Image 1: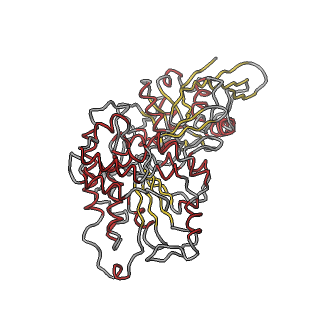
Image 2: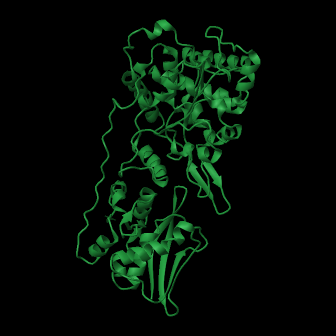
Image 3: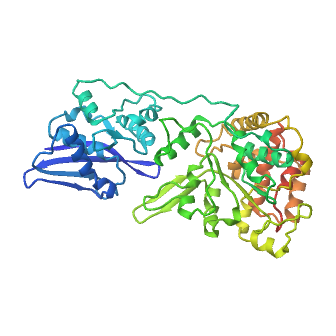
Length: 508
């Protein structure tokens, strides 16, 4: 007798359908698992055996073969436990196979037959809906799957509860989605009211948030660079439903969704400068998403930028342009989304002994040049906004908190982002930018039409500061954002002048 049930395998955020085929045959009692299983999948035999024993069942004294098809695709993860166990139960005629034919099944079995959480439930739920199937998943992730409308979901806490439901002795209640409402005040986030002085730095932060631009703060220790960057999430625009789904799928694959709640706040990832290239861009034995993908549609903050390994920084160049990262492995090529806003901070020199007035290193100019040379010119070229953060004056620290904080700035940022959403709404979905920083090619030309005076200013600046073609277009994008903050449909000369002010035009 052969039983066939459906589950899934993951390649990045791509979901592949897998058939779990269970066959009982005569011969010496064995339990064989085939179909390129990894170590976690191969260990399913012992977990399934122990789970069946926990509910008072034993494997029959027959030759049991479980095939995971297609057989040439590497299978990874512990979520194959539940479909394998259910396939065996169907072959033992304890539950009818017909009751499970309309479901995609995934879940890990504990030794006491409880069903443990696994990664990837949200993309698996989307795949099940596309295939017009239901979903059987762990109870702990039922609310995560419930965000997919019109999907039949069974979320049992244990294997016994699922068997009783299928056999009509127990009813499993359908899970309900439960996401907290968005709070525009964001009281739990650090507020820009905490920052005294540094008004220009706050302005740069506002422009970066409004247009999704990459940003680099350069300044002496204690100037407030990290403090400013950590308050960027408090002024970022709210996520659209499409962005929430995109981000939540990546975090589901990584196993980072907690309590079945989708990610309704933009990610803010701040890896330590000792992080390796696979930790940043993704990879490892199972090609898991890295920090750059976990920061998709959010912020990747790199503090002490020159302290990162040069090879790590160079791996950021391609995803900063393309918005995705491709990981090549012998078994497969996996692509993760990586549309991020990179924010970085650095000291002018390694020793940090910078004169607060002259901004010159006490050990001489060579210390500063060698330190900043750790960052390549092509990476600098991909940074839209560059600002030298001055040292904070003592009289600023004694002032009362500023009257304007994150709430007021966030309102202006959201208004500017709403203009961008409306501006790009008529473009095809696969080409549509989410913000000004993503506008490219003909789309950028259409939304940044300049008058003769503005064109002359930008061309003269490009020649004087030797701007590359990339830098030229990035100045246009920043100018468009500054105009949006001013609620101006036309990009005027002051907007271009301010954008050029925040451009790194020569060696630091």
